Image (tube, rainbow, N blue to C red; front, side):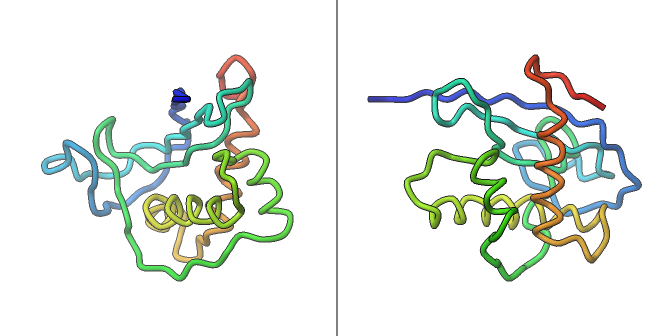
Length: 146
C-alpha cells in the first residue's frame, strides 16, 4: 500500500543577527546572503491525525539554505530528550536506530549551520530542543502561538 504524506511548512519569526554560510538548494549561486529565518517543517509521516516534526532549517530564501556547515561527531539522543523526540519527531520508523539516523541527518545537514547564528557552543541537543520548543508553539490550526 502506498502511503502519501503531506508536508506542512511554517516560517518561524525567529529573526537573528546573522552571518553568511555555505549554500545548498536549487537556486543559490547568487543568493548566498545573510540568514533570513528558520523554517519548521511538519509532516504527517504516519498518515494519521498527528503532525510530526520533519526538521528545523535555517534559510536564505525559499530555494536556498545553508547546509552541512561543520563536521561533527554524532551522539545518539538519549534520556528525556529522546522520549520527547520519539513523541513529536517520529518518522514512523520500526526501530530507534532508524529514528536516530534521521535525527543525525537533520543535525548534520541543518542544525550545524545554526552555529553561525546561535554561537559556537550551540549543540545538537540545543538544536533538537529549539525544534521541540517551536513545535510546542504550533496550535492545531497551524498558527504560531507567540
